[in-house]
Image (cartoon, rainbow, N blue to C red):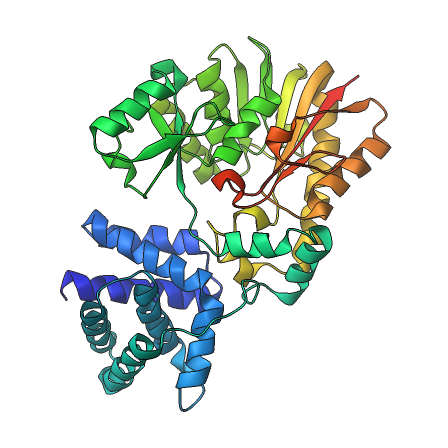
Length: 427
């Protein structure tokens, strides 16, 4: 199988299990990509699959209009293959190459009898282009209604931004040179990039790049992290030598950022998943950072806490991920309305369990990558109502929209992900 066909086969198989078998996009890609030796092929598979998921409503509309017979459950792999073809068209790949490689992939997948159909459908998209679809058409109706209810004036912009590819953001390690120094390294390497005033360590690349092609990545000069997530370090801003808890830390980017800015911090980083903790430890090692990273359930402090209060606590709480749909488009396939109720319980349990661990005068930052009021402002409002010694500390407009109980960055604003921040001080 030549590489061009292999990439289309790989993309089809990934898309099939994500669309039709409920698998996680991130986990499925992690399992599939190592089989492709060339980084360019791996990047193409990712681009195809992400485009197919982001543009799912348009692709479904094309199939509904152009297929003589509706696709059934037995046609799941064929549907994925056609969406792979449509995604290549959206990505601007040469028409002849995308048709030839996708038709050959049809045969490689054991479907030679459908090669003519795939050829005809892909030639039709070149003649007619894909039909239009509303930006919220891929969202579950219940979730789209929640977004419109929470953000009536911004909902259309949220749906539009969530359908676009996210930019690649870097976080410069200030222990290893300034942001300006690293921008010069990028310029010298012919890589187009820009800085953002609102995030002191953030650099935005004009185009996606393999991380190992970036100057100094392996030596710990930079990490990949969205600028909205980088603002967590600004919002928490612990004092020198403070004892800090990152309660839901994996993959460790926010803990690493805090330590890069101030290596004197005595930081404990928890996660309930041992594999994620190992990856977090690997990341700390690459960056030359020291942290107490351990497997633990943050909501059960009796099992891991030594009784010494923390000066600062970060709860980057499990959430619906509605602020990062552009990075995790399979969220729209997997999320169920009952999930929000379950997540609300986890979030409130974390707040209640960890607040007693905070020293008087200490700061707790509650953050999510959600844009739902129930997980954010309403969660903080309820916590303040039941916690007499908690005081909401203001954050400036650089953190997003004022919700009265924290700040909300919406997807795509200044190129960032959707993110919520609420800073609470213990009186």
